[in-house]
Image (cartoon, rainbow, N blue to C red; front, top):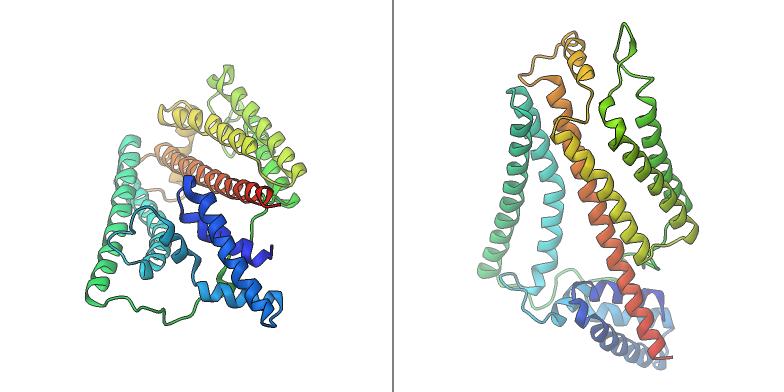
Length: 336
């Protein structure tokens, strides 16, 4: 099958329920193949026939809407794709800006660690709700007062299709960077005992709490080592599999959950380090209400939380692509 058709099908069935995806892909593929053959019989080359047929079919996201078992709801199918794209764009820009701004304001006002985290969480939830609600309301109003055109003013083109995913692929550079970041994490956990930005009469002050070397820091090192091994395995295979995705999710949770718990309970950072941090940053003009230790802890919690959400979302996207590829391969096997 032409790779452009594969990209179109992947895009079109992405919005269809998993239980209906195989049937939708089979029906759509058959319709496309029939039209392509007719165009080729009329004298067009395969590539020209594919381009013409797909552009006649239109935006694959609109095709997906037709296969849904429920209507799209308040927003017409003609504008649904634009609404979804705009909401995702706004959330990706506005939410981090609001979270960062609230974090800085709360630190400046001297809020406690719990107060910092609560304020950021509430701000993020409210921002997501407001962005989604008001954007949807605008589209609903436009749909009511300016009915969507029966034909889009800008024709859809195959150039808008994303590149096809074949597994999906994982390049050697990506695998090396992934494994390298895990090894750097191990180097930090071990090395911060001997190299630190702060020191006293006894030498460098460790950043992480020495009391947690009985259990949690060895666990963190073990998880990071397993992550490096997983990265190498993924790089050797050159693609994601369902099993490797599950292992990656488990490792991300095994790393982030204990670290977040240690940070939230005040057990992650060395008290001697945070106590020495205050005088050190005071010389730099620190005049915020919160202590530098609380501010550092809050920032680390936000960073670890964002990283965890990002990794879980990435794993979900990879799993989605793997399922699509599996469905496509099953359909091809049935029709050989």
